[in-house]
Image (tube, rainbow, N blue to C red; front, side, top):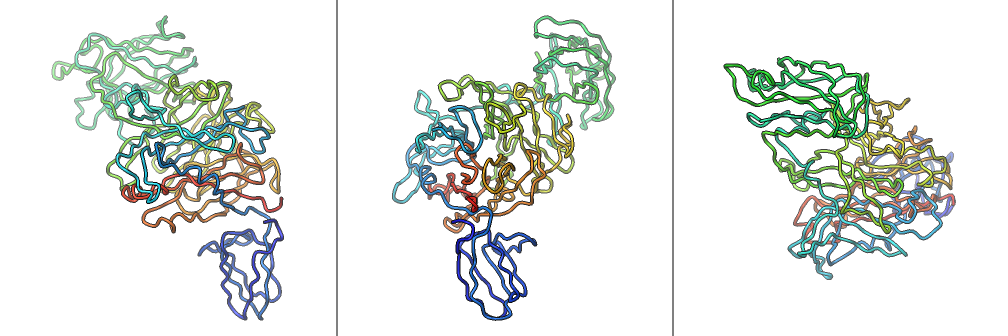
Length: 598
């Protein structure tokens, strides 16, 4: 349908008339002297003044009238059943969510691509097993190896799961055991600004030697270090585990170390006690060597001779900028347990011959209700070499990304969407930055936030800058909310044609897991953005009933035209038995946002 096409002829009677449409339409204005009041609604929500999208109208007519409702300028949604049906599979890959797409042919990520492309789909979670093609029942065992791949090429989609030599199945990307630890591990002392309790670092008992190494991943000028010595609310005595004397060394290569200084630390009286150590030197690695004689290396005394050495936090600064991108190790650790975490993939970008993605590190949380028994532990970075048009997942490297932080009232998490505004990505006006979107969550409300980094510095998180509504700053906590009611997965892309040519369209599920898909238009990659406009009510809740829900819509620009935007959304159910009863529920659906002016 095009702007001006007839949607419906309505016979109005005198008084209040309620008109129901078969979907959400942008409508041509039609108010006349015969209409006292016209109320535009989406379901039972009354639209703001000036909004002409509706699937329901209430018209107060003075006299009977034959009214033609016509399509207005905007976006009309059509289902893409052909692509949706390609994601029905009864053998091996049996459904997934968390879908993201990448152009593996040339890395171009914008609308209106002109050549045949090879697309890689990522799925954050996956079902693998056999289902009945008539009843759609999933047969046991049905496995969840987390991430899987799909390849879309020449109009067809095939699915890839990571089969092992023994016939079992695994995710393609797994958590590096180095980053899957809990206990009194050294990473605790550079684990900043999280609500969960940090137990700090505690060495083994009476270690023969004790070294702590901080790797900043690249050379950094360090003006000073803030040290929060060991403190526990259990007992003031435990502060005697705190470090007393330390020799600090620096290195550029992790092999040859230069002595910087020796310093003495006091015993902490609270968790907020800190001491400042001036450095004013540039290195990548900083090594702390602590003497392992009780009362010399720690604050043990004749009354408390435990023989352990501890720290709560260590923060590295250049002036006011705190460096957060560190990997910390020690040669002596008291308690180290594996958490058995897994990852959920977020968005990514192709830079040179590498695919960078920012998955979340996930763990179980059995205190949550069914279907939501997980918690987000971290964000991570996976770097995969692209070989023969596919990511070399076997040799991918992982590091933790300091892109998840908490304050008293809010949480910031980045990686939900990326826009590479680069020459390689085919951007119209490239500035060499990759824009990484996330969300600030406060009392359940999610707001869009954005960071950016030069493409050649993507993996160095202390080079990232965060948008505060005016400037790009180093402090992640200054990231300003730009758009409300977004979802945990979404997209932001520049329109190259159509009624909104030159603007940036954000597409998302309104409030993450409601039945509404919405869009917003921005004047730039950082806005300002228009109020969210709902354009589609997903039908799956009515089809599958029970606890079915839809969530995390996003566009796939390299598979779309600016005037015909391919959008996916996920479908799932909170009830496991419901999911097992019908393999049609858990899989992506596809729709298209059609520009009615073209």
